[in-house]
Structures are given as structure tokens and as C-alpha cells.
Image 1: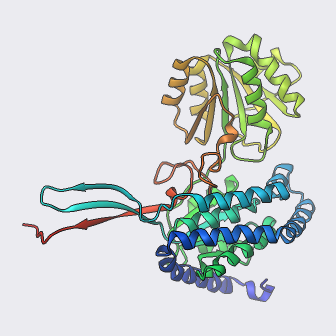
Image 2 (image 1 turned 60 degrees about the horizontal axis):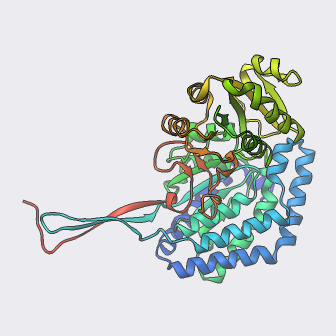
Image 3 (image 1 turned 90 degrees about the vertical axis):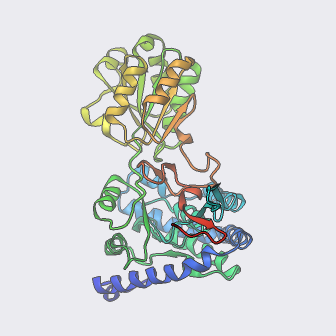
Length: 428
């Protein structure tokens, strides 16, 4: 750790500039590293986490104690918490990334021109990636492993709340790099929690940072989008909607609604608003709300819903635009799939939306007309996750439309170049 005297603005600027230079220096050896070496390093990282589980949990205990002292919300504490099951998931995620096809060097397309030129479009690493995240220490492993697999050096900046946990996990990633003789600067963790370090990353580290991925609350993402001088993979808040159509199977609707909201309330794929077709308000609404309430969920209801479920709390205008990350859900009635689409397009953050329906026409319209990164039919919004998509893990869910959208995995962390082969052609 740096002392207070060493964490002046000037010293942080020098520190971050050096981190940027080290990352850039690691880019070429990493880009040309064989798939076998990268996979061996990833497996060594996973083994190091297995061997150091006790150390990681002890570090996490310090972060949790600090979180209690700082009065972090229950949702933030849930995001921060590690236990043996969550560490096992981190280990599994890294091993799954090792098993993924290496995207670097893949020929995406190839064609011949009439003049005899043979053209290929080939995947290449993006370059140096900066990941700025809050609370969730597992992002250290997910982001580090994914960027590494795609041939990108990564600079990780964890929030102060997860600093100890992230440092313990990062040490295991470095062990994996050392085991294969790969540059330790391929995966760096910013060693200070001062917000000035974020400011230096947003400036681009003297041209050494190629893209930034923010993963955190609305204020963090807004700051990154407003101040960044390099491209950003935006990961906005998850105001996710679950729509129950008049054709929905009631038992399925109850099961999906409870899981979408209550499995883990602190993740971005947790449903925040429940929309119920007005045509089945008398049959579907109360059983679903009873099941949610029984699971410990607070209900914020529109005036019309309150008449059918008076034990709920009245919703305000703010509820339709709030990412609770807690055991709270806002509920209203809509006029069929058209009404659901109108509500979602008005209030959604374009992250994830789901429909429970047996009518294929309603599902098709929902899929065609809603412009969100992930759409699900008869499945929980909690499947909005790179691991569940078979990507091993994810850096985040990109809600923008440029380059990457939805779960950002290894393929989304690549760019491409063209290889053109000739036989002496010159242009007239």
C-alpha cells in the first residue's frame, strides 16, 4: 500500500502512467502467446485460487467488516460477499474460459476478388482494456481471465469496498502468469483506491489504454461515459422487466417471477418491474404477488393493482425507473403485449426483458419490437449472464449498440484486421 505522502495527485499520475506503459509492453507478447500457453496459465490461476481459498476468504472478511462499518446496503453487501460456493464458481468460470475456443487468429470471413486478391477478416485482440468496477470481487477473476484469453492486457481498478478481496484474487492470477513465463503486467490491479486513479484511466494513460469497461452503479457509469477519452463499453443499470401475458401458464409465471426477482436481488439481471396483462389480472396477479411476498419481496403497486392487492405499498413515479438491487418490485397492469412494449420502451435501461407466454404471436411481437440487449421467453431474467450463455464468464452486460452488446465475453473483447494475399497485383 502507498503511504498518504505517496498518494498525492502527482504520484498517482506517475503510478498510473507506469501501469499503462507496462500494460502496453505486455500487449505484443500476449497477443502472440499460443493458445496452449494461455490455457495453461488460466488453469494455473484456477489452481492458485483453490490453494489460497482461506486467504481470499480472510481478505473478504475484512472487506465485509469494513462494509458493515460503512453502512453498505444489503444489496451491496451481497455483491461483496464471498463464500466457498462463490469461490468455487470463480474457479469453475476460469476453467471454462480455458476450455473456450481461442478467438485470436480466427478467420471470420474470406473471399476472393476478380483480380485474384484473396482477402480474410481475422480476429485480433482489442488492446489494453481498463475495467473499473465496484463491490463484486469476482469481477477481478472474470475480467482478468476473459481479457487474458482474448490476448488483451487488462488494468483492473476495484472499488475501495472490495480492495482486500480483489488483491487476494489478483495475486492468484499473477501466480498463473508466472507459471507460464508470461508478463505479470498482462493483468494488473491498481494498488490505490484514490478516485484520482480512475481519472487517470479516463484520460487514457498517455494513449496506452484502448477501451474502458465500467461495471458498477449509475454514478460510476455516468462519470465514465461523461469523462472518458477512450471508447467505453457501457454497462448501464439493469431496470429489467418481466411481462406476464394473458396466455401465460400460471404455475410457470409464479415460478419465473419469484426466481427473476428473488434468486439474487443484487445482480443486474434481477427483475425490477412486473407487468401483468390486464386480461388475467383476476387470475394471475394475486397468486404471483402472494408468492413474491412469501419469498420476502416488498410490492410497490400502481393504483389499479392496489385495488386487487391492497397489502402492497403505493408506487411512485420514481419506482418505474429505479434499479432496486433489493427485495422490492414495482408492479402494474398493461393492455396486452402492446401495453407491455410501450411501458418497457418508456422506462427500460435496455438491459434485459422477459415474457411469459404460450401465444407465439405475442412472443414474436415482444422479440421484434423491444430494443434491449437480452430478451427471454418463458425463462428468468437471472439468466442474463455470460456464464449462463456459455461464455465462461463476462466482463458485464453491454447496453450500448457499438461493437459489443449483451454479455461481453472473449469474442466481444476482440477486434479484427484484414489479411490480403496477392500474386503481384498492382492497381491501375
